[in-house]
Image 1 (cartoon, rainbow, N blue to C red):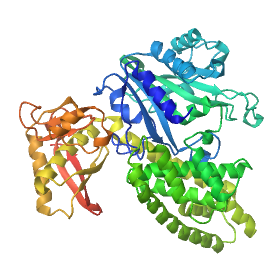
Image 2: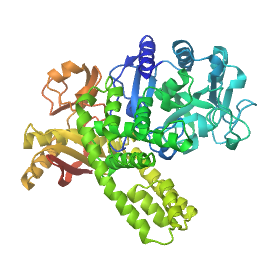
Image 3: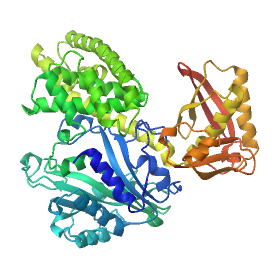
Image 4: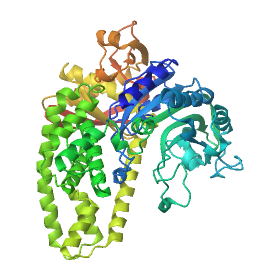
Amino acid sequence: MTAKEIRQKYFEFFKNRGHAIIPAAALVCESDPTTLFTSSGMQPLVPYLLGESHPLGKRLVDSQPCLRLEDIDEVGDNRHTTFFEMLGNWSLGDYFKAEQLPWIYEFLTQELGLSKDRLWVSVFSAEGGPASGGEGDKNANVPWDEESFAIWKKIGIPENRILFYGPKKNWWSRSGPPDKMPVGEIGGPDSEIFFEFIDIHHDSKYGLNCHPNCDCGRFMEIGNSVFIEYMKKDNGALEELPLKNVDFGGGLERLVAAVNNNPDIFKIDLLWPLVEIIQSLSKKDYHSDKNTSRAMRIMADHFRAAVMIAREGIQASNKTQGYILRRLLRRAMLFARRLNLTESSYLKPLVRMVCKIYVDIFPDLKDKETEISAAFQQEADCFDKALKNGLREIEKVEKLDGKTAFYIYESFGFPLEMILEIVKERGQEFNLEEFEEEQKKHQDLSRQAAEGMFKGGLADQSHEVVKLHTATHLLHQALREVLGEGVKQEGSNITAERLRFDFSHSQKMTLEELKNVEDLVNEKIGENLEVSFVVMDKDQALKSGVRAFFKEKYADKVKVYNIGPSMGSGSPFSREICGGPHISKTSELGRFKIIKEEAVAKGIRRIRASLENS
């Protein structure tokens, strides 16, 4: 069974159960512009999980492209990838455990034909859970998930294949386990589903006994139902929500592997054609040895992810998303060299194949293939120079200490394996512990930065962030009135302290233009305009002149936010399609102040601004 067939079966299954199919969000997430990439199916839907009404209703289904970089060093085994699709179904205050678990079990066993004897599940078990439970947690002040346990038993999963884990494994909130959740945070227990590949024999280096969370490869997680039913209160207790949500996520690639009873996800139809190209060009066999298969997997994964990033207009650079694109490409190119692919002739065939595989769900790839290939070739030429520079750095030192090695690893993209080989060839000494210590410092800093970016964005729905998000609507319209109708939003980035707004404009703004924009925004704030929304058909909204900047990504039903009189009772100052959230009156904003105006790229300007208490 192919990925396309499974994706379609999933849509049809939940569509028949009252779910609306929603379009995938961009990989560079529009609803949370302060995080680099959409890393889960849940991320674009956070506002709706927190109470915003979705224009398509309470039952939703989607397939969300995601990019996750925490496990980039694990890519090369049989199941980790950076880019993946997450199949999701959602209940926003509608159905709950009694419907979700039987439905997903039915989909897996009847629609996909997975043997029920190969499925294992886990449920949340805190203090007071079943005597046979695994982990407990004295700090968890919620009962163990007896309801999910009873449902799985009723469905037909025997008790010996139902495992119990505490909050570290079977609890979801954006902040972690219950004791880490801030006041106002939502969360709840989850129930994971694992598929057992019975032909894989347990490797004792991963522990004496095998179990679903073992890393030996015998088990693969294929789905997780999150039951968002609690909110953290001021007194530290978790209180049940009046409306409870379901958030299911199932990795498409892993589901395809399970359906085809092959634990190697690189042999599915979304990845194997890339491996075949690499085999053909390198004249090496994927199955010949572990180093060869690992190099081919890294190349296939990284080029697929790179094409998906480049598809959204990102170019390789040393900052933000561009840095990630550069890192993926250069790491793939290094492993190409390990396969004796020293020329970049593999670039065009791999880009062409990725586009061919995904053109049915991303039709724009057909027109972007040539542009992406050219950009990757340019990066390959730059990387050749970086490699030569890196080798010169190594030649300068007699004893390669850990700090120097990590500098070369991070600055020039040399993987550790290549550094070790060069050190061995030159007869140099190398302190691996120092290298690992430097790497850990860097990972800790990166993790803290990533967490800060996510928490600082719209996803946290703090009042300051919501105010600044609303202010971007006023700023956008003010720019159009001062500079002309050619102004178009090109991106934004919001923290609790300031907003950053990118827009199309061919020249630097004058001081007078900046003052006029700032004054106009403050004038509208002073008028105490109402901020409201209506749900409309997308086509109707676009025909009526509503501003929209991601037309191909919108669902058939959209929210149109008006600042000023509501539609039908006057002419609002601003009308834009937007998911929210927003304040209710402009007077809540305080005083708007432009901090800086600068160029970003050719034809793109950027304004940084803040709000001050009036």
